[in-house]
Every structure is written in structure tokens, then in C-alpha cells.
Length: 148
Image 1 (cartoon, rainbow, N blue to C red):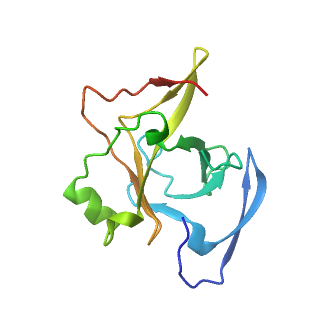
Image 2 (cartoon, rainbow, N blue to C red):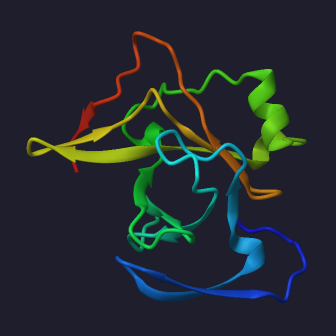
């Protein structure tokens, strides 16, 4: 997600997984409402996990221990789509839908890799605003098993 915003402020912070990181302020992703279970954490960055960019880490810049692994759900479930709510689009201040990116959290449990299809993370790459929404659909699982 590249954004053309001017900023000269560099942020240096510690992380448990990646050590000391230095980024420009315009790369910071803001969650106005936090993330469910982590409401007090509102500022994150995305870090590529692999050279293909298939997996990304959503790393908190406020808590060095908090990082979530994310991926594009359509790679594993091509028909997956997020039902967009008007208030979510307003929160993200979406002006152009092509700037809206949807990723889901990856979990490891009981020897399986799963995706949380019920709680996608939506990013507006134009202004770096984000939110995690909750989808109430029976055909989307919170532990959708994938093979990697």
C-alpha cells in the first residue's frame, strides 16, 4: 500500500519479532476504533513476511509484542467478498473503491493453519485508515482451514 503523502517524520520503535524498526510516519496505519481485543492499540504497520507478499505482519508500533499475520483471503477462497457497510466506508473515508484492501488474520492451532473469514481487516491505502469488521454469515468460518 503506497501512499503519496508528504512527511519527514521518522518513527523508531522496538518490536519483539523484528527488533528495532524505523519507518516514515506516512506508513503508519491508523485503526480509529482499535482492533477487537486490542482496543487501546491504534497504530500499526504492514511488514511483508515473504518475498511473494502473500503473507504480511500487522505490527503494532505501540506494543512490541503485538503482531498479527495476515493474508489475502481470495487466494484460498476465490469467491470470498466482504459485504461493505456504509458506516465502515465512512470510517475509512473511502473515496475510490480501488484503494480498499481486504486481508484476514491467519491462525495456527492444533497443527492446522486457519483464516478468520468472519473478521476481515479493511485498509484504505489512500489515507492509511483501517478497521476490522465482523461478518455475520454462516458460510464464512472463523477457522477456515488452509494448506500452505
